[in-house]
Length: 316
Image 1 (cartoon, rainbow, N blue to C red):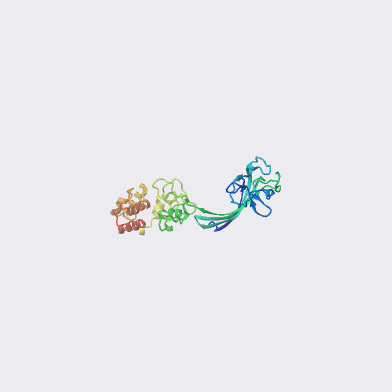
Image 2: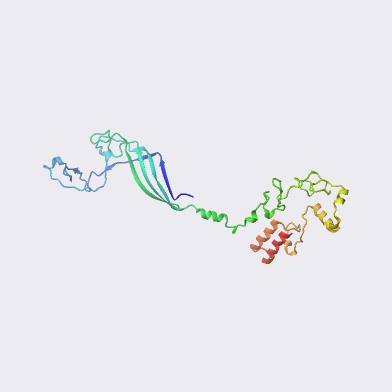
């Protein structure tokens, strides 16, 4: 965040145009003559005993172009010059839209003629150094057009409301958030598909990173490492006390052959309209659409049914 008080220094180069003026005449056009007694009169002091004179008061109006007067035989000199400006000061931040600056500015020119007095002239002379001048200033900077940062940050999260970080966690760090990850405990470094499950190239039910047989024949029985089992090995592996009924086994193999996910909970009829791909399974995308439709008043579900829909999603 920008500091409340910030010092600064700056330097540059500039072009200065000047036109030196003098207050040589009063309001009635009479020239000033400065006498030795400290008064200003309308007659030169050398004529004080011969010509009547009057005391004048300066009007401080600088009406006379000094270059045109050529008082010191400087001629028609150039009234433009380069200069080096150097500023030093402090910036004050009052609030995000208002700033104040207090600074001193020195200007070092390349001419000795800004005041119409030069060491090159006749009569009154100055030193042989170029002219320079300095001024101090106080400024206010008011920003009327920039968008405030707070407003931009609020708009970034305006549609999210209370952010639920659990919905965007990725516990196994496979790039698929837990809310849509069908295989939430994938080992580190294993490539996964869009559902977060390890690839199974030969579709034998054993992921490639474990599979010791790359091209298993379709429908073959395999062990835990994806290796094809003989008929005797299959029979030996059966645990008859825990065997399932033939109709359930047929349903299981039918689901493998069709490539469809086995539904462990029957999709209620009320939610059939949400099952856009008619796979008797409520996917995460279908769940989100059902919730969006409810809040957009495009759904026939009531509040209790929405809760049932969510519970069914996690139970299936």
